[in-house]
Image (cartoon, rainbow, N blue to C red):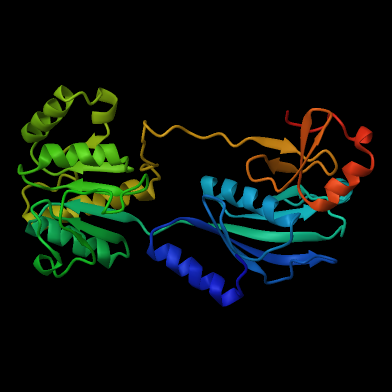
Length: 333
């Protein structure tokens, strides 16, 4: 979707508020002729959706592929797109990715791509002074917080919380593989809450409670068929041991532990075993050598029983002018 610069930034803001990760790509240099100009930018989601404009039919699929890779790695990168001949002669600079892009225009681009992670998503389950304190402190440090009240308490019952879910519903709470879930239900819904949290696949599941109570919960869930590997993901008891403290001070220990784990890079991402990893089929454009995603390719030609995929119409035209010169290269049957 083509947007102007301000619309792109507004879309970035909307995605951030929804807690969705995305990459922001900005053209920082060009050599014409090229449809991408300095300052052109686009938001690229993890699924490959593009909002904005960073280049034409040759550049966009390459930038999308690189953006998704950068988003997965979590490290920003400067990407140089140029002709294969140019890449062979250009002086290599550290920290830059060089990607071949063969277009009839023979233009070149440098694009800065930065991953934008959503705010830390903290979901606290329960209704107690400790829960209220943890939610408020999470909000104070800029985290996106959700209070889940399994007893049906609505927002009016929790005026300090930004978002309240009035049921034990982790989908409604927006839990994903980056979320942090703290169960503090004080024996009322411990088993259901911990099981639901584990099945939602967050990065962290912690249970606030005594060790004997935690042991009882985990034994019950083991009897329901949850594996030891799954149950080992539950942090019991949640939080740093601060000694004999009040309910609200327990919340301080829980948040401190989460901040410590996050700063150390020890949280990672959650696991949903039931969701298989999907491999993306790729082919090589036989004319220019660019990698093309088979499923989303807009340009393809069947020749002698073999399907060839192309980055743009120009490469198709070149191929059709002399198929024998390219046959057998980068094809997918």
